Length: 327
Image 1 (tube, one colour):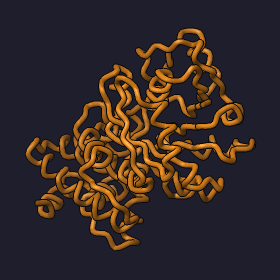
Image 2 (spheres, helix red, strand yellow):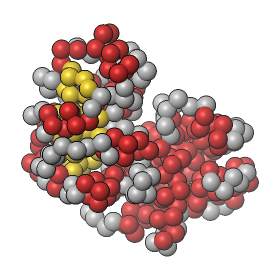
Image 3 (cartoon, helix red, strand yellow):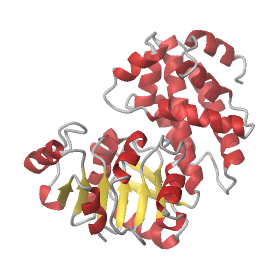
Image 4 (cartoon, one colour):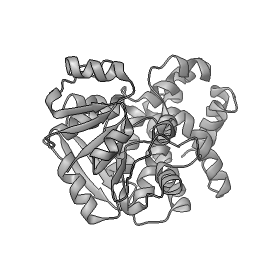
């Protein structure tokens, strides 16, 4: 089944690596002609996961999303959320009955909503033609072929089976879920919590506090998900708790790294500018904070992170207040 990936960042590169294990050819829509030429010439992404080597005979690279969508039955969207609408707004070919898989763990600024809603509202792509990739699956470890667990959420069993067949490999184990929105929201929430865990680290809080922080975060996540979208789910599953843990603790986590810089005294603006990758938690905090308030959800951790990122409040003061609310 023809499959393509839109995006050329670290996770997009990791997804291409997953797919070439099972697919004869993987279509890949990259950012510009420089990236396209570099991959075709050297078999490496010149900017992200540069150590990952590809057999260029198994890649069909383009900079035109319409060329990719025309050629593929499955399209994996793996751009940062803030750039998704730039790519999708160029789409002018037929895409009915194609499957769109979101590997994006952030809010689409154009509609201030999750990708699933954006695709349905802006492009009339229903949930039956959508899927979400979730779970603790850092791109860097996929690049090193370290065993990782991927959750694929989709409402259709047939779609789930197709995606399982192209993603599962010796280093990727695949779990199935029908909780499309829950998986997408939890992937966004864990980025915000990871920013908070990083702030705590930068302020000098230790492992004991971080354990309490994450324990409270998963309970807060469950409360938020139940208020926004009720569905059968266990937040202790790897797609929810597992992804939260790895993002809050791992040195590969860009969201934790952003928070760590802020905790150490960087301004929010300077911390963002110092990073060469997008920290989705920053962009999501504003939207998720508003959503929580609109739905009367008690979210003290999200509130604290929002106050620091957008209220420009002192991180040390805000976390001193937060510690009294955790247990």
